[in-house]
Length: 329
Image 1 (tube, rainbow, N blue to C red):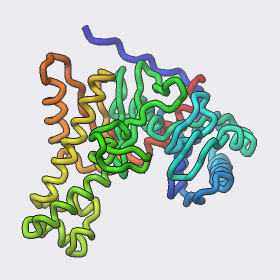
Image 2: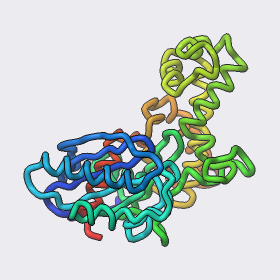
Image 3: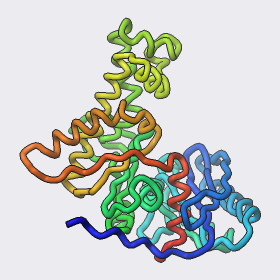
């Protein structure tokens, strides 16, 4: 018997502001109750200075507030890092060199608006579940495949945050014992094998070994394996370059292995795959789906989760953060 549709959170009427703080840019927008971005802006991130970053965010909020007719009901801030369960303090944000930053208190004092803080992966997951590829699905895991791997988990209409607020750091599941070193300090993390960085590493390695086969790929760069970039791999694969296609297949295989592990733990109805690497579509997802199917089906008759491409693109973090600011605590 099919499960009933999830209850749509009531939320507050009006518009809210979503802010996505990254290591290189601050992206922000005014978002309505239907998830539509009405106004948006971007600024460079002042690096390694939490005070300067939050002052810039407050200025962005003031700028957007001045452009909108009507009141702003709240501000949601997404950060690539660990956020406490109260959605107030950033425990750590490696790309920003932050530790224990009281984001909510600082921004509420500067803007006079209610502020909630969320992990950026969780914010993107919320957006895709409310307004994107996962809309109407009860149990969704969003996996963002970019430079690394981020994500978020939404179960029964709620973001899963964990006991301390730092759940869903899925990119740091252990894929290979004592494997490649990761920026988190551990070895063999999943994102070292199934991310954009992993794709570039694999393509460069294959191109160095098989230069004649990689001619299309190499010509798109500077002619050397070291010159190969992520965009070159996608373009070359679409042109039929066998080395680029194999690099996608290898990374997709690793991605499928990790999704199979998450399936065993979480039993989601669907995975939504986003991030820059996902723009390659079936070049990545064909091998991902094949491996996921093989690994989940081994020795069991359990249902397979669906594999969906994210729909909201770069706006997901802004939309999700803004909508979470509208929801009841």
